[in-house]
Image (cartoon, rainbow, N blue to C red; front, side, top):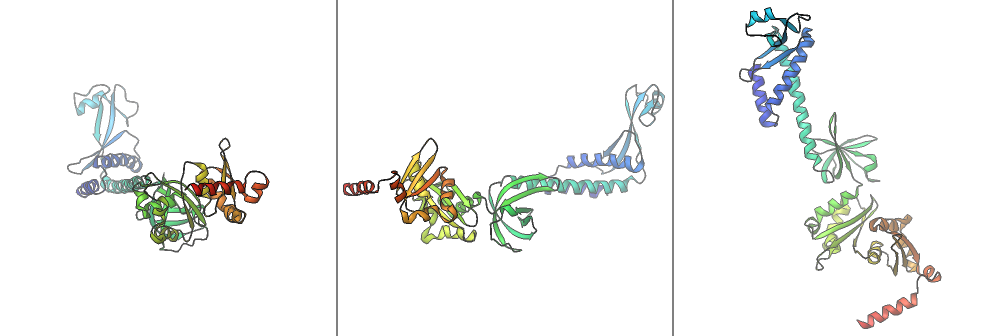
Length: 365
């Protein structure tokens, strides 16, 4: 057993990166507990693991005293001198008390300790690997599901996809390959717990990074995302280089890039809009595909009043207010949408003046 244990410890140090010294310390500590438990001993003991031969011995540690009150813990000066004349008061004498059948107990204990430490080390490695991947995208395989979670196999660990993070209407079948966004990595008594999402806006951003090289290399920047998972999303993009078309880069040739992302999200509609530091331009862009006549800005309340043609009002607001809601979330501005006729009636907008201004600008061009 001794040589086999040493070989096992050497192998674990090389293959698993677990220090042999740490394992030996843990085995010695466990053997002390095993000795006291199995042999009903309460004295102070030390276990010595010989790293050369692999032998294991147990030593009782006793203090040298003038008068012995507890023979399990103490030794008189006379008894100490019989062992070695050089012992003095307050010295600690070690006496070997290794039981005859201690080898069997030692083997069982060492196996338990090594197994536990290997499990802990593997959990630590998995945790270290995935803690660095928080807020990143990963592909997994659907394993099983219950009323709380979809269990997604990520290779060395199983991730949890909570019901609240699952896309509405999306069906998950065993062995389906899905892309998920890692939202949280936690240490628990049962090992690393990894929570993932299919609804997080970060998933959309990472998908664009995968499909659009200009985003991945930083030529095009994702400024903001507003998402109602499974239904519709808006993403605002910007390019510092005026020669680069950020929207076109994301759409791709014949819409190929964005269509790949739409397919991954099972048909979720995606509006790609050009970001602008000018709220008038940004809010108008964010309300795409609706046409905007004018944007009135209230800087103090961070609010805008948007005027659209009468026939565009329902499009600007969107089904159940979705388009306006997503635009407000995307831009960070409150948006109040008014039809052209209502705006003219309340004096907010002069259609004729705006048309004259537009025609004058065209003549100058």
